[in-house]
Image 1 (spheres, rainbow, N blue to C red):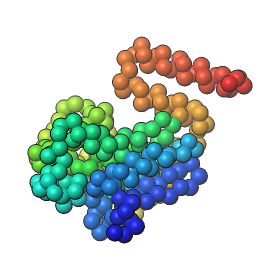
Image 2 (image 1 turned 45 degrees about the horizontal axis):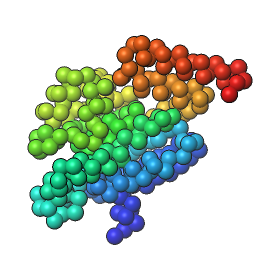
Image 3 (image 1 turned 90 degrees about the vertical axis):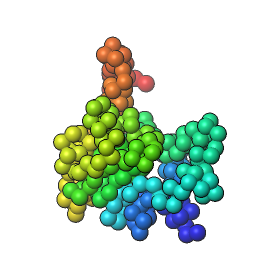
Length: 258
C-alpha cells in the first residue's frame, strides 16, 4: 500500500489561514473510497482554530468521478463495498454512513468558509463533496452529476439538503431523479456555481476569492457567516433575534468590551 493510499488519497497543505485539501488520485479521476471519507473526517476533526478558508480540489483533470468502481460489487466480501454495507443490520448500516457523512459535513464548520475548485467531472460523491462546500468555482469544462437514483441508490453524503438550499425543491428533484449532467454554464445560472472560469484560470480565480474572503475582520466574518447559514432554516423572528445578538457582540468588541 502506498502512502497516498494509506491516507485515503487525501493530502493537505496549510498556508497561513488557508487549508488546501486535495484528492490525490488523478490516475483514477480521484475516485473515492471509505478510506477517503475517513481521511476527510480526520482533517475536519484536526481543524485548527486559526483556519479561515478551506479549499477543496482534485488533482489532475477531474475533481472526482465519484465512488470507486470496485465498491459497486454486490459481494459481501468486498471490504467497504455496497454488498458488505447492505448485508449489515440497518442500524449498523446507518451508523457507518453517519461516519462517512462526517467527512463532508465539517466543511460547514463554524468560522470556516469552504471553496470547491471544480474541474472536469464531479459525479456522485464528487458532486456531493462540491455541494458540501460553501462556495464553488467551476472550470468551463466542469460537469456535476448525481446519478445515484439510476443506480438504485440515493445521494447520502449530505448532498440533498445543500442542493435544495442552492437550487430549490423542483430543480433538485429533476437533477436527482434524472441523474443528468449539469454543465458549468447552467450551474452558474441556477446558483450551483459562484463563478465559472477557463480551466487554466481556476487556480488564480480561487486564490482571488480566498484573498477577498480573508479581507474582513475575523470576528465579523465569522459572525456574518453564521448568520447567513442560519437564515436558510430560521423563521424571520428567529433570524432577527440572531442578528440582534450577533450585532451586540460585535458592538461590545468594538467598544473594547469582552
